[in-house]
Image (cartoon, rainbow, N blue to C red):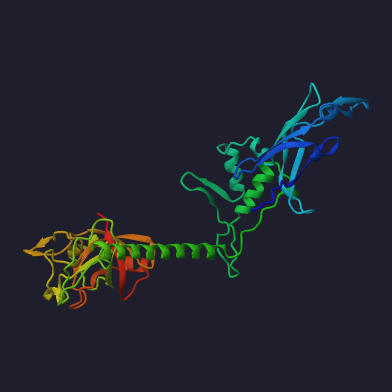
Length: 382
């Protein structure tokens, strides 16, 4: 198979104090290195016939003609590449770093240059000086040793009704840094606005990734179960009369359980009011009331059975997990956000239904936006 291989047209122009020079016809080789968040560079090798770049004629300050190097450091340079005729693409703009001064014979000379960030690179700036803190406060910002910059009463970063993101003056701060500290001409600064709907786009990407990861995890567990009979999907099983019989969910393993809400309406809790933990707590079901008749496992509570933890004994009767036993909890539909809750009480749950293993108290139900009955995912946090 034949392939057309070609090099694009290269043009380079250098602006000096004596005029604009097109050095394109004299380029023998070169390279452009583009870097993100750093200074880009260019290297060019030029033919130097009749010492035209090292012994160029120029007019001195007194009006006399002298021979001197044509190019000097900090002369402006721009480089373009062209693939389609009459449609050049600018790939570099900056300032010369090293230039030829003298040549013993008319061979080749080399030029190196840095992009326009060179001006910032060599601008002395110490962010620890008192001046910088004062300057930032004048712009509506203050420094914070833990979070970096904090805005003082500026507009917030929000997405308005037109799905356009207000950047909370970050763009204005960047503009002032370039202009007032970097010395850049305001007419030469252009800071493009953020794309419309960027928050919605990023949120959709995160949600899609979480959903995909959760589905993939379930597929892996199902495959393992079919292959070697492990990794129970539901995390529990129920005997004929509804009792919880499956146990042994390991540390770090998430398991889905049924949950109901509670508001401490029964008065004092068995673990003491000091264990309520501002409402980020739970009651373990399956110990009291209507569920006493269920044939529970040896540990005395649905959660203790689930994790295969020997239950606390009160008056000779197992009462499940110990008080303040910590669990991590999350919404199965939003697995990236989790909270920690502690045991505060024992509860009766739903009569004859071992699927519901936990009562959620007001603090965590508000955080989860949970009400009534539903499923949550929990794991041990001890």
